[in-house]
Length: 240
Length: 214
Image (cartoon, rainbow over all chains, first blue to last red; front, side, top):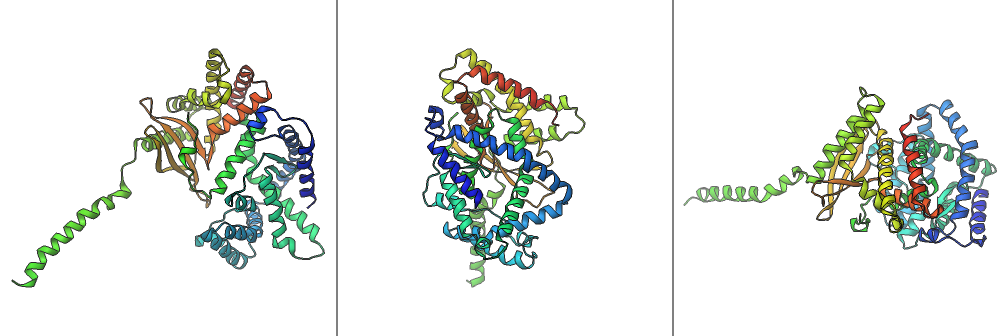
């Protein structure tokens, strides 16, 4: 929650800088580009000095099967939120898969560390409130680079906070809640970075402007997620 | 006339008629691939074979991959697109220099991207026609050693200059040329629209991408 508050402060600070955006930034729907670039630098330092060293340790200390179990378990914890968003988007088959995954992986998957549901034709999928808002007509708004969370926009930032608020594990009253939330957040970052380490490195290596590259990747990736794998209208592609 | 003598020829005719009617439907799954699909299937397999050929030295692999790529991809057309609005204000000499620098950069970058998928199988699943000379060929990259679902890779193929050429590639819905245009336009926006600065950076980047990764 502290990170969410910090991210919100960043958004408000970006809006309040008073520096007029460049025409290029406005054309790219990125009026807070200057602040966003600064935030990316901050995120890069956090990643380089705190996250990557622990990801290295994670690779050394935890064998591949263990890392897969952690990945499965973290995905399992997200299933109630995914199910709610599936329902809100009217994705009945995907909602049924999410529900089936909760039942099967909670029991036969030993609390979600294993994924027997995938062998029964219920593959994992992602869904979040940002996507749900998009399906119901909410536009993404200007690009934002959130501290610690990375690329986003107002719609996805609101979605992120809403998903956090409706997550059942955050609603269970318990004394050690802060440690649970911190541990889950920490392992989520470890898991995400261990999965994306090579991809991010390739983007950094092949980019002439890493920030602009990331912005483009994020926007296209989110569009793809919102379409749930359906092919877009080919007429929407640019002419060469 | 006995009923069976009448019904047998009729029945035979009915079965034959049904077979004739159903024949095109039965043939549909085995329909011949379109020229764009065949073009992608044959040439991308060739590219993956070059990248996975352990007998080649690093320079040999790079040169063979580059030669193949330059025969398949219209890098000049992509280069002009990636300049965005700055194409209109750049001089013809700068545009030519940029197209050359982009060619070197693109071959090095594509090799970096494709090198990760050398052990995977590319399967053409169909195509969409955007206009009479513009096709999107849909493929799946299947990793035989993984339980992960196949990755979706689309190739945009143009045929308006006689032979087919690839003008864009999308991995899981992310189009590479759009991403390159966004970053080049972003870079030029940060550098007063100076195309020569972009050319210098692209040339440096192409050299660095050719070096082995630490």
